[in-house]
Image (cartoon, rainbow, N blue to C red; front, side, top):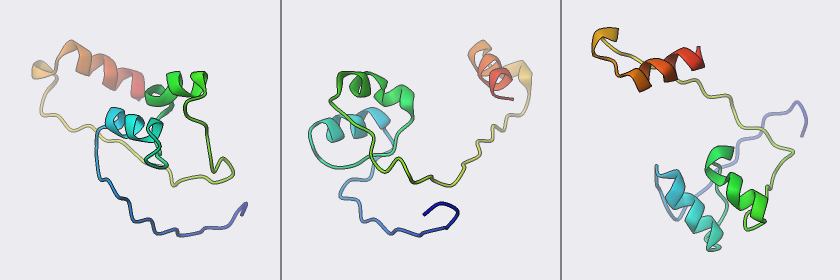
Length: 85
């Protein structure tokens, strides 16, 4: 489907915002997940998870950080924001 847009409706049996929980469910055979590589890298290397649907691409997502002042921003927050820009 190169160059074409397809809308695929899914009905997940689990709704979660915790990538580690979703990874464990996938390892246990509960279904397909879409997670960043850093969450599933070990399982991909071990072969307990395998990539699927590699010919498909999801829409690009943007991440925005809103903060009032750098004065109250932690060092970790400053480093994270500066490496992403």
